[in-house]
Length: 410
Image 1 (cartoon, rainbow, N blue to C red):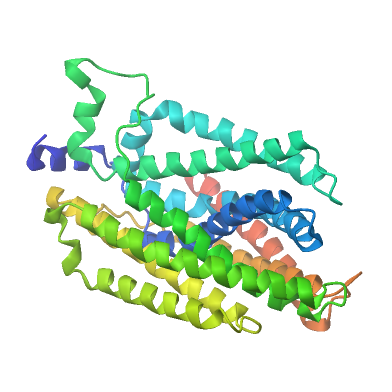
Image 2 (cartoon, rainbow, N blue to C red):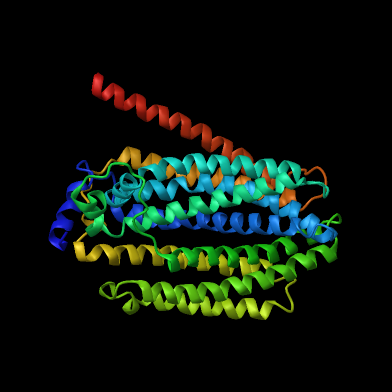
């Protein structure tokens, strides 16, 4: 299709009812919520791979303990990445609904299969986790772990395909009617970009490596974690993080060269900012390789900053791909719904902020204590505040619903 026809199609496929608040708000929230999601994706994939690799070297006590720890990290991480992935997906569906839903229809079988493969992968990994204790994991459990990791990688590739296909609306009709015949099977993988997918796999190496260094620093206050083991984890982490940062830089250059020239991505300052930041990240990982102790939180913070820049870069790139078709999210029809928007903000900031802050603080402090943890006054107050905010939220939610019902039926 030509650009004019594609532009007309995209605007026709937009939700005719519009959205309840300014699209820029949804865009910012989409970027903001994607950051923790991708960080847990990175940590989970890295932990799963290293948990399996470490098991093959379990004759060494450090590797055996490391395998058990990373198997647990991956188990928890997958749970969190699923939960944290809901918000950015919903915001994407709100302002990029033509792109997301068209791509989902074109590869519908893979979208449905995503649920089953994710379930199979998690069940396989959980079984591996249950068996990987004390150096006695049977061979079949190891292969279940391999199956679990394979399913996670497949699911990541499916998400990559769905996102990338959405960037090429000019090809949707050709994909839907190959050879002039309608294909409603939804079994096609129509487009993918290896350097882009490779970049995010390399990002998992970087973030996981930084996580390992932070892991070593986090547990150094506990008497049941041998200093030699923590030094082993830090040393391994710095090597992994440095390797990942270099691979990211190489994959990013390949990715940028693969972007069509008409997108003009090289002229955007965000491109050069991300390249420069990755250069700084490589330097930081290199400098930390000989003295890793005490560097964990700094390297993890640098990794979070890198994830934030990648999140923004993804959105810059998506807007650049949509620009030739005159698709601008700021043109989306807005019908302000103040009560629902206020309730949404209260949910995210009040309930999510307080409850999330309470859980993160509690887990962080409890993990640094051997045995039973006794919450201090600050954590107790935070818990009380999170509970109170939840009660107020439920009351506000029901109150708004009852008010709207009475207004419309009174």
